[in-house]
Amino acid sequence: MATVYRKTFTKPLPEGAEIFSRKGEQFARWKDSNGRTRTERVTIGRDGSPRIIAEAATFTAKYRDGQGHVIELPTGCRDETAARGVLSQLVRRAELVKANVITADESAAADHQDRPLSEHFAAYIAHQRAKGLSAVRIENTRRRLDRIAEGCDFQRLAKLSAAALEKWLAEKSAAGMSAGNRNAYREAIVGFANWCVQTSRLVSNPFNRVPKADARADCKRKRRALTEDELQRLLYVARSRPLAEYGRESMKVEPDPKAEKPKRACWTFAPLTIADMPAAIERAQKRFEKRSDFIAEVIKRGRERALIYKALVLTGLRKGELASLTVGQLDLDGPTPFLVLHAADEKNRKGAELPLRADLASDLREWLADRLQSLQGEARRVVGASVPLRLPPELPLFNVPTGLVRILDRDMKAAGIAKRDDRGRTVDVHALRHTFGTMLSKGGVAPRTAQAAMRHSSIDLTMNTYTDPRLLDVAGAVAALPELPLDAMPKHSPEVAVATGTDGRSIPTNDVDSLAPPLAPTSDKTSILGARPDKADPSGGADLATSAIAVSVDGDRRNRPPSFADSGRQNVGARRFELPTSASRTQRSKPG
Image (cartoon, rainbow, N blue to C red):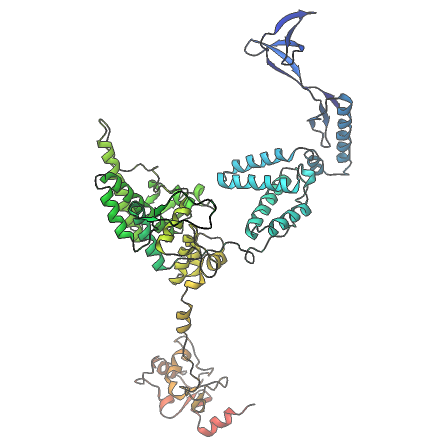
């Protein structure tokens, strides 16, 4: 039943078309955009209007595959002879599947080899959207795939090559691309190829053996954590700088004699420093003393910015996660204040409930109360508007600016905080999350608890990547180790040791009392130090056990058994235990 044909379809009647009859059938005649006369048959559509019947420009092949299914596949050929040549190849491949020469997966993959790679990319992106991945991740994947396809000249699936990808990655490495960034490109193309295998577009993933780059050895950006003093200065500047910017003093700009075209401006504003903040704020308040509403708005902006920094440092939230929070995701009235992070807004798509420190929860309560008061004031100014009793749950908690990293850079400069330290480590918005992880370790939090607070899948990531070793009190930890002087006499001299009588080990004579508790039997045991009770003794050694248990851990001698204190021996069955004399100690100390 293998054949080729042109598919037919209907479309609306062209404008100005003339309908006529020929041999009992209706036709339409019109002129196309090139001025040529076209004639096609006419049919009646579902809505009762006349429509023309048109044929596809290319042929479609219809045949049975190796599993007996009827397949219709476009050949892409305008010539019937060429289309039949494609059909013969398809039929031959179906026969090879029937004969078990090739598998059905290999046959299905062959159907996709000659399709443009852009079509496969579009289908893969649609698959990621259906999975519910974030828009940012999907856009990054699409951009990376397009860049790889262009750089490696991948136009179709048949041209995918591991060697070409390795060469491209090596060129990017030589151009300065970091190992982490190269791994992200590799991850994008490997994920696409895995999806092609799952959808029978490829038989195997050609990029599985492309090695990953060592991100630790070739890290272009290393972040550092902020100290407590730096955090205090940053929060002060963040709250004060928005208003202080309006009180900056002007200063004269000296022309640069080396410049070919000197700047026309001869003055500029003096840079802000943390010491100049109070004076600048005072000048700004005098400048806008008649615009109290403007001053209040600027102060509110600074307060929000400082609260954003504080929330990032004390919760470990990422910038995007903080921006996604709404008022309804906060629970500040319970015994333990916390926030709920939705799975759709979290990086690992699991969701979390994060506890809040008491001072941060208090600041958030005041922030929301002020916002409610402001919202109620706006409602009262509108005639007929209802005054809200609480904030809408869908209201964003903060207005996190898109250019927060640039704002942070300006705040750090005014606070006197270096962007890059002597180790080459930098500070950006994500470094506040590093600060959170470092403070957990510095505060003595258990590594597993710190991993849960950071929401990391690996404890190695928490301890090594998100913990700044410079801020850890390693010197204090070393100082807590015991002192080991070289010239001090030992507290317990081996010459005055008492043999235990079981394995040859000895204990100091002044610690005889401490021997009883760990070695004394309980009431349900019948021996001490391996001795057996005397069968002829009706007590069975119970008196010895009772007297031994009575010796306290701290060496209390009030109930010391006479066997240890007085006679130095105790008859327990057929065996004797004696405190050794100096001679016996000498004999026992000999080897062998």
